[in-house]
Amino acid sequence: MFALYRALYAVVRGFLKGLFVLLLTTAVFGGGGYYTYLLYIHPEIELEKEKTSGVQAQPAFKDPTLEEFQKCLQIEAVGDPLASRRCFVEFLDNYPDSSKADEARTRLGAIQSFLLFSPRATPEKQIIIVKSGEVLNKLSHKLKTSPELLLAINRLETPNLRVGQRLYSVPSNFSALIDRASSKVTVLRDKEFFTQYPILETKGSAHVGPLKKGAPTMLAAKVQDKPGWKDNVRLNFGEKGFAESTRWVVLSPPSHTLYSVSSNSSENPPTPPSGYGLAPEAVRELSALLRKNDTVTIK
Image (cartoon, rainbow, N blue to C red; front, side):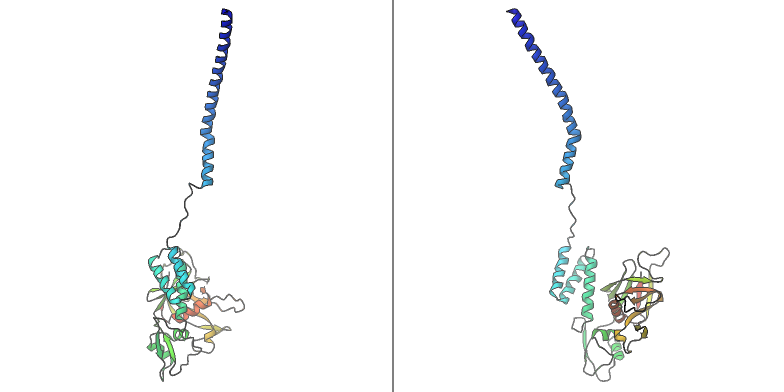
């Protein structure tokens, strides 16, 4: 009997010893595996979760002025240029640093040019009736405007006036800035923004972009002449065909002349040796807005 108990004890002891070894092995290798999981596998899983969930992604920047800009676009779409002008003016006054500021200026400039060069009433236009003996040059001097602007505003085909003719007039209180850094020509009215035109190309010593080292940062040029060109023939204001001609605004120094760049290769308008090329309609408007001897700032 004693031998039986002893044999049974040996069996149980061996089983318990084996079980202990098994548990110890599992603990060692299982702990190492869990440590490996924490160190290498778990971070990879969490990183993949972050990539797919986008938890760490930075929210896209939203310009808070976009809503106000959209309101101006909606008003513009209705087709009320006076209301559109007010909206864009207020927008630029309130948000001069908006991401939409340059687009707002472009749209405002187009609206203001449309209002000025249309034979329609606006708050800034004066209505006059041509009297006996009045001619365009004398009348424009009396109204403190230019004959070119008076002709353009009223869309007159010739400078000849009729007694009793109803005309719109505005003072010629415009100035221009050639901004080489932004490649734009900006027009001011009473030192306030009026419109802007993109510079399409340059010739000769005229250039756009960053200033060359040692170049003067600010130049004051003057309007020297405003000729027209038709079939490579130079025309002056008042001559037949001038209304349909391609314009230049010649500045002094002449290296900064503003000239027309046509999109129609068949027209092939003449170009100066040096200057800034703009759309034909832009130079046409500038020719009307600026008078001879007006200062044009170049920076």
